[in-house]
Amino acid sequence: MSAREYKSKDIAVYFEPRLCIHSGNCIKGLRQVFDRNKKPWIQPDNADADSIANVVEKCPTGALHYKHLDGSSAETADDEISITVVSGGPFYVRGKIELKNEKGEVIRKDTRLALCRCGQSGNMPFCDGSHAKIDFE
Ligand code: SF4
Ligand code: FES
Image (tube, rainbow, N blue to C red):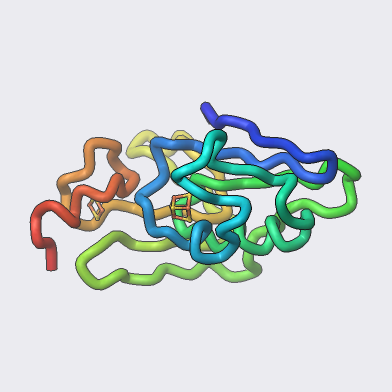
């Protein structure tokens, strides 16, 4: 994982740009922390760690993750695997995910992923937002 790290004294937030499809959940959830008009765009000092963790877990693609720096709790996967079909968009997958290639090799372990359904992603098998450019239905 080639993630960028953003830290306060209580929490580290990790961001993987190649998985972000600009759903905006993070910005809508906690604008004082996630703001594309600021540098750095993630500022964990501006909210408490639990609120940040709560919003990070709503990132549907796994582009955001976190670690509490006091070791108190870490993100846990949903008990059940769920797959949500997004109208005109990807599959959102949640749970304890092991994504494998055709050889059976695990290519990613995660708790949240967005998988391409339109065939146009430049970052297969992950959605990269290209569905929005092709009127995918
Ligand atoms: S919630 Fe995740 S996918 Fe959506 S904009 Fe934020 S980082 Fe990107
Ligand atoms: S579904 Fe998003 S790029 Fe294909």
